[in-house]
Image (cartoon, rainbow, N blue to C red; front, side):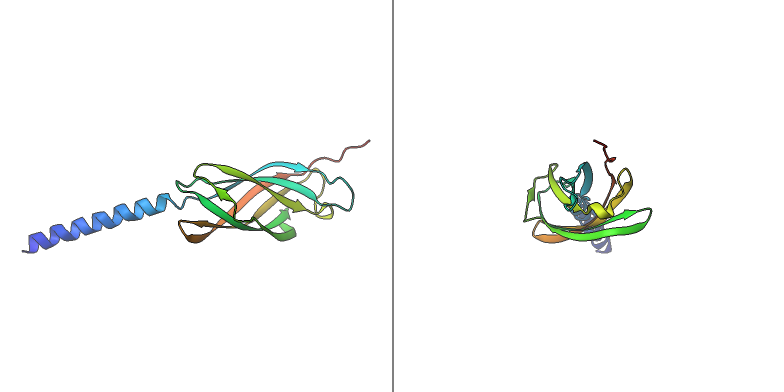
Length: 143
């Protein structure tokens, strides 16, 4: 009788481990990649950082918002939040998001760090992902 219980306990632990591994695969980290930075058309306008949000998970995710901070040499220069309008990102796909960067906070030719939290719904669960990427600001052009 105890042999049967031991065998059933081992089977239950094996099944629990398989379920845990299967669930972990669907919560892979979302990733940010900076594609480009567009200079402001006028001095009183923000620059635009084009960011690719990659869904590395095996299931689609619906983006909700991005809370972000730009920092230079470890010092935060600006922060903000961008609503993403429930944009759907299929498994293994990516979408492009525009993030405003005030010209006054961007030293032209400098490298900034864009870091923050990305909220997304996946499998009817809202998840938060810590995200970060390097942003090389454009060098100022002389006419």
